[in-house]
Length: 242
Image (cartoon, rainbow, N blue to C red):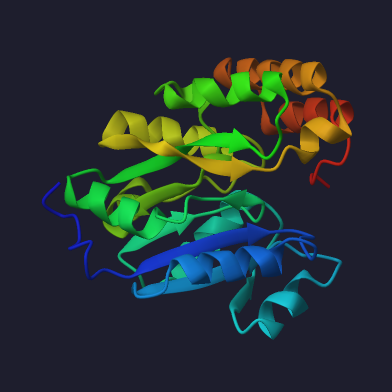
């Protein structure tokens, strides 16, 4: 814990992996920037080969947009981390909206000795069953985690763990968080990141939850990446797997 940076003065590098997010990215960038006023911050967007106007929109907003060597959140997030200058890394999806207080929250928890952590989440929907899903994210169980909840980690801890596994094209966040939970002081901040419910709108509540359970079970049992991706993209519409 003594290796933690002085979080009051440390730069937080916000890293956003994107793929075809032209409709959401400018709003996300402005929101994160507004919440970061007065704090040392850099924002890095890492594109995975978008075929729409995502990259142009990011650069027109005046932000850094890197091109990852290939598509995949793991390699995109590692690319952003390699470029980042901050002592604290904060990974945020393009359609996840952390609390306005995220800068203060992250710094406070790092100063308390936590090397990594995330938020709970709440969907941008009033559907009662989605509220049930959200409720379980307060528990520190791997199955209740996910990249949508955002993730902060000190740079030294990230480097010590070797970053995300780039051979993971699916479940990369679960694999990484599993290592975090075993190796360090991982905290769930008792506030909500607002997460898009579009996957549930495009499919159905029951279908998405069943598929999530199936894929998580496959991950736990050691199924190959190819098998998990095949199952997911053949059951869920509008996925971002190639």
